[in-house]
Amino acid sequence: MVNEAHAQAQLRNEIATWLDEHLTGKFACLRYRGGPGDEEAWPELRKEWERELAAGGWTGAGWPEANGGRGFSVAQQVIFCEEYARAGGPGRMGHIGEGLLGPTLIACGTEDQQRRFLPGILAGTQFWCQGYSEPGAGSDLANVRTRAVRDGNGHWRISGQKVWTSLARDSNWIFVLARTDMESQGNRGLSFFLMPLDQSGIEIRPIRQMNGGAEFNEVFFDGAIAAADDIVGAPGDGWRVAMALLGFERGISTLGQQMQFARELAWVIDEARRSGAARDAVIRQRIAHAWSGLRIMRHNAQRMLGGAGDAPGQAAPRREALVYKYYWSNWHRELGQLAADVMGADANVIDAHDEKRMRLQQVFLYSRADTIYAGTNEIQLNLMAERGLGMPKEPRGTR
Image 1 (spheres, rainbow, N blue to C red):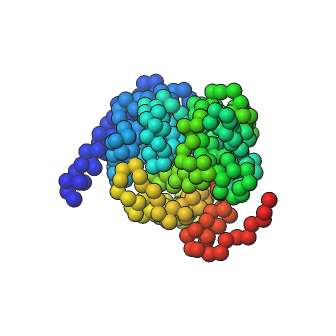
Image 2: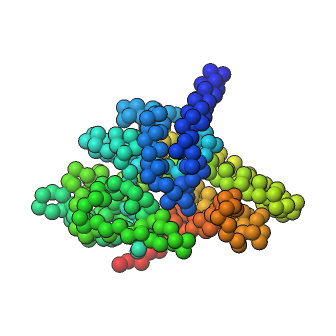
Image 3: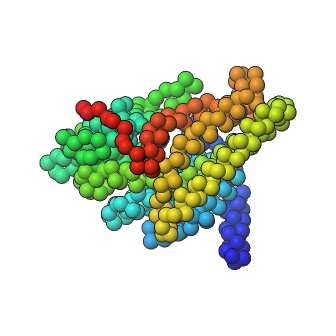
């Protein structure tokens, strides 16, 4: 145990030192930027930062060495996430490729797919977005209606629409869940495709928000091509692949999210002291509740990851993962409300020169969406009841 603790301390120091030396100069402006609600900040410079991380050997750290990674254990990945957040590391432009698609291809893809796609993800030269949600299939992902039909050359022609697609305008590729069996319903008859975005038949339209930004996009497919070799798994096997990917999304990748939450809580505490709100006993109680909730979140993440096999990069979460999204989204929404309350009247005034205030305002505004996207509270409760507790499924209509 002593040797393990010493090795972890050395790794922590190595990561912290590297970040301190490299998150400087032209990259200094990226500190604490590019996270949720701020994903439009310097996208090209953040792509360059991905290449800087790759050159330092910090991309794909949890992937198996056989696939170009460093084979980090869960504990080592926790250390990297903690030190990255502590240094103010920017939001990762390569997160969807490295954290979601890469592990999915390692688990479900062919050797050819791994050979063609994993190196670009690791090098920070290939960026991905996710084509899951649709106007009629947001939380109810099994209701996907985007269609894929095989053409005379064995390729697939994709037609339909995806929505709320983060980073679509800044990505090279998209993975798409589409229906290949037109007689199927629900989660059957779906397939998982890898598609280049730079092709005819694909149109990306930004979704303008009331702040003028456009973090999200609509992606329209009009006979766009997915090559015959770019289907992951067999036709009709898409739901299994998609659920494997969501498992990785709620696995190791949650650790970096928690460090961002800890940073936001620290901002709230600092503001409470500055504004005098910390003298209010109710505010102090709410801060204590937020602090304890964050610890509960961390322990549950370690519990759900701890039961996954020991193979690096293959940490598929346990049943405990079913509660995770519901828990963190409600916790974060409450933190956003707390941030507004400790600011008082200042929460209603925008001041571009007051960076700390704008950060807290962003926490409040962005956290409003947390209980809606990636599965609403109601959907999450159904998942916990039906999959976790084995309760009868909610009646569904037919179409």
